[in-house]
Image (cartoon, rainbow, N blue to C red; front, side, top):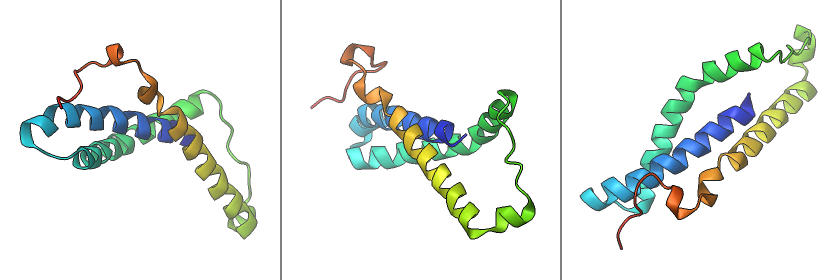
Length: 115
């Protein structure tokens, strides 16, 4: 599921930030970094909303439960392993979510900012 979280987070952030930069940045004179921050906020809100959808999709695809006992889940080695897996999933998802950065200019749904 964390690959999905990372993918949607980056994908939406890049598209939202680009749109905000090209539309609101010009209209209101905000910087590219401010547009990126607003895009990140928007992406985080969408990420919270889509988290349940991703987890439900994972269960529907048959992703198995861990099967660990309570004692195993509390073991520090398992907690480190779990966190490492989550981090790696997020990193892979974020890398895949950078796909809009390689889109050709003609695929953009809005014109680039003037200037």
